[in-house]
Length: 579
Ligand code: C2O
Ligand code: CU
Image (cartoon, rainbow, N blue to C red; front, side, top):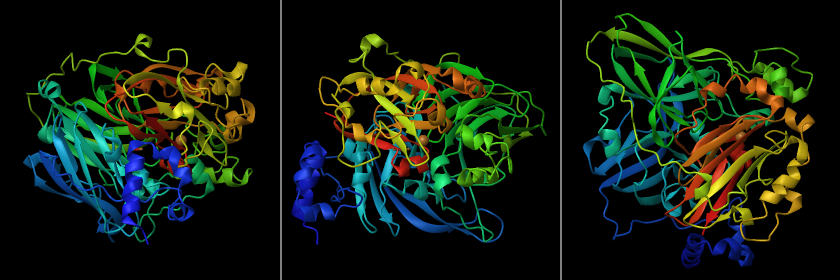
C-alpha cells in the first residue's frame, strides 16, 4: 500500500532537489517500492492558477494500423484531442501510428492531460523543448496504466521541430519502436516574417526503420549484439509508410526531417547529386541557408530542408537516398561485414559475426523516399538569404573556460557508459551539479582513444575534468569501467553516438577527430551541420565535440543520454542537477 501523504512529501523533496541526497535515509519499505530505484510519485495535477491558451488531451494506447498490405499491425501510439486553442494545433498524419503533429506558438501556455492507456508504465518527454524539470518527462515521473499526468508549461523555445516520445527507464526503446512518437512544431514571429513554404508545401518527414514478421507484426527483441549496436530494421518507413512517395509541384518546399529511428543514422542525399539546402536544425532556423553535398541525421536530430523543384518538368522523379558511409559501428563489426552485407568473416567472433546478417546495413546505399513532380507552376517562394539571428557564445561567456563539463563515452561489449557510470537514479556526481543561470563549456569525448588525448592518458584527463566545479569531491574510481582501454582494443569498440541533452539548446564550437579514425570520418564530415542551436549531436568514433550550453530558467534534474535508444535503455544516460 502506498501512502499518499508520504508520496507527496517525497514529490516535494524530489522537485526541490534536496531529496537527491536525502533519499538514502528513506525507510527500507519505501525504497523497496521503487522500480529500478526510481521513486513512484503522485502524477502531477492541473493547477488552477495556470491559464492555458491551448489545452490538449493526449493518450498513449494500443491499437492496430494497416502498414503493409494484408494484416494490420499491432502498435502502441499517441492519440490526441484539442480541448481548447487554435484549430490548427493538431494535424493527423493519414493512417499512421505516429501521434498527430502538435503545432504551438512561442509564448503560448500549454496544458496537456496525458493519460496512460497502455498496460505498462510510461511518461512523455518533449524532446527539444525547454520546460520546468517537473514537465520534462523524466523517468522518475512514470505513471501507471490508467493514470493521468498533467503537463503545464509556457513555450519559450524559438520556432523549431521537436519530438514527443516516451521516456520510461529501460523501456523507452521498445515503446518508441512500437509506435509512440510524434512531431511538435513551434512557430514564432521571426519565422513567420520569412513566409517560408507552409500548408501543403511544408512536409514533415519522419524517418524510421522497422522489422516485420510474416504476419506483418513488428519484431523487437534486441539480443546482446543489438543492444550494443542498436536495433536496426530492414525496412524504411517515412511517416509510418513503406515505399513513401510525395507528389509535388515544380516549386519550393520545406521538408521537416526528424530521425525517429531507434539507432539508424542516415546520410541524406538527392539521387541526382543536387546539394541539400539546410535552413534549420534541432533548435530552429540557421542564420542563413547552407548547402551540403549530403547531410547526416542521427536519431533524435532534426533538419529543416529547403527543397526546390522549380523548373523540373512534370514527370520528373527524384529520390532521397541514404548514401554510403562508415564508422558508425565498431570497427570490429564493420570488418565482420556488418556494413558491407552478409557473410564476410562472420562467425569468427561468435555474436559479432551475427552483425553480418544485418539486412539493410547502416551506412549502405538505399532509397528513403521518392519525389514525383506532378504539377508545373511558375511561381515559387524565393529562398531568403537571411533566416534568423543567432547570438553566438564564445569562451568569454562561459563559467568554466578551462574545465569543460565532461561527457565521457566509454564503450565495451558489456556496457556503454557516460562519465564511467551506468544510469542510476539519485546518483548525481559533483561534476553533474550545475549552477542555475550559468553558461557552461562542455566536452563530449571517447575514453577509448580519440580526440587529442590519445597520447597523454585519457583517464587522468577525465579525472581532472571531473573534479567538479568549485568542489573538491572526486568520482569513485570503481565506476570507471572501460577507462583503462586506450587505443587498441578500446578503439575497436568505439562507435557513433547521438548524444542528447535535455533543457536549453547548445551551440557546437569545435569538432576534432583522432587521426586513427580520420578515414571513416571523411565519409560523414561534410554532412555535419554544426552552426545552429542543437540538442542532439552525432559524435563519431574518435571524435571530440566541444559545445557551449546555457543553463537558464529552471532548476532541477535534466537528463543527458545517448539517443541510440538501445544504448539509452542499457543505461547510457545520466542526470544533471541544475541548482
Ligand atoms: Cu528524445 Cu531524453 O530524449
Ligand atoms: Cu550510444
